[in-house]
Length: 288
Image (cartoon, rainbow, N blue to C red; front, side, top):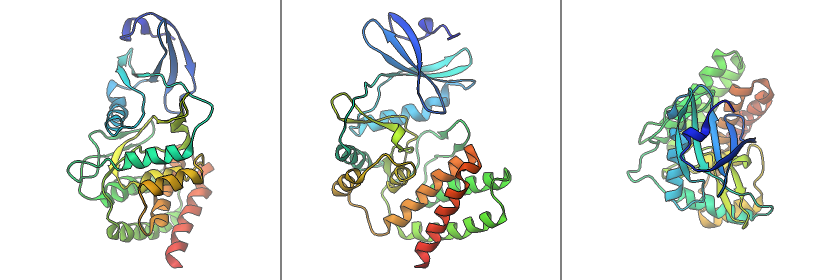
């Protein structure tokens, strides 16, 4: 690495820094020291505040009693943002029921004032969302996130007029359902797919790489339904610990559609048919 991390990071006896898999947003490295390893994330060309949302999310999740990496340091080095975390050692086996109970525990941690949002915006490499506090989940989710994605997909010619019109039909269904549905503002992971949890060496679950906010807890469950990695034990244990209310299947599809639209914006036509299918599912469920 060209950066002189030994002079920047507040840890002693750095032996070597090796690249590891860290997702498609960050460069990720394992920092070896004489005593223990650390996990270093780097986002090229971004200021230190790029990681504010992730740091705040990890700190909030820790308050809720969730096992997450500890924030050691963050800042900017030679024009690149960085975040230094404790290193979680992954094990070979884990229990999906324990994972389900952990996510339910996370969602039972609610905002103090009953508002939706977060102290930091959503800051992705390809898209940003306003998380400023509001008393309306519909505003935060539909107006700030879904409508913004709709505009981007149309403006970037990733949606045609038919798809835009279909979205408007789906949007009305979302508005009607979320007006009826009263959800407490739960602490969310915000990007709960299979790549953002692990089982540790003792078999216990841990969460990482959050895009947290306080919102409808079914938002996280929608993310679990996109790429797999969560089995029936997970959902059964979650529902035992924190039962879902009537109509959850439809609302979970709203949130599944959201994540698919994010991926259509980011990766293009690969996700077009999945987005179209999700909108059809929503229209058909309401039409039944």
